[in-house]
Length: 498
Image (cartoon, rainbow, N blue to C red):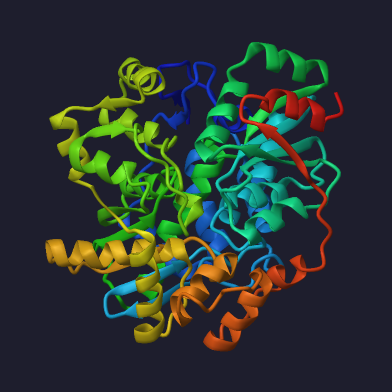
């Protein structure tokens, strides 16, 4: 399987796409084709555990990795000591026709673990396969969850380092503590004075800077990414959509070949893009419903075909979705443009220079054949958390609640009662203050810190506080570095002691 840049660059292997993260022309690597998975093969997944399902899917893309290499990497990534549910990505029934795919049972309590527990193994293998002897230096921009998941995945992995940039005032208290208390001799955490889009733009600029690459090379380092711009982040996410379908078959909720809808809380567009890739491979998916918070640039894009970032940026109670520039949308644009890299490059140039682009009516209709979109503000999000807790006895975090609300609106608007899976991306205890306020009233969290909110929420809900959250209380803060958004290169060099 070869991989091409969304902006028309030359082909590379899977291991090269994973090792280098971003194409030299600034584009994202995409597979030459979508390997088909037959209904018969999907049926066979029902008798497999999660690692076996993952191996079945991954080997179709990672052709320059051997099957024993893939299986060993999966066994290490999804070690049951790291995940608090043996199913790894369990499905929970919410109501008649609605299920929740829980992706937060890993070490950092967020869906990013599903890929970032695996990526370090794929990266180190890729370095060996391509004769790369320099240290693989991972640069990450995070809106809250990717950072800790990357740090945890790459912590003390020989031959690598991991540097994370996060918006200083744009993550929850628990998210910040998870990152800044991280140990490991090869980890660096840097807060920037700006938002996630500033962090992500800055990281991309570092990848495209020949001067910075030269500075890193002199230190014996080569840049790579753990953001979802890296195909190595995306491909493990395809797996859990197939796994969810297999679990629905096992539960008797659907019959083989019946379509389902997936509703995905969306910021950088990687999670829902993985569902689109699964659909193109043959997974019976009817609609992919893109759920946004008040930063609803994607909702507007799917409704009118214009991507326009010239709008107010809002800090919300679902901070991992506080994003205006959704990088992975470029991969969908590539398919929408019939794989015309020059056209995609033109759109991305317009976005950089004019902050907007339009894809035209025909291409918008093409997208609307598969995608629907909606959004939810903070008040509606809180109402949804409370309603699902009171009516369905299910406690969800702020991001999952956005998806749940958007699904209800979608069904009211369309009358489409196709079985639906709400993709749950984080533990409610990562956002305990906001979840507590939603369930117990707006004053319930007043004067309480994140840990006191967690304790009160546990008493109220009966849902146990994860051990990872309890442990944060006594961990020392190890990372205090801060920088301006235009000083990220200098901050990296400072972190490395240069």
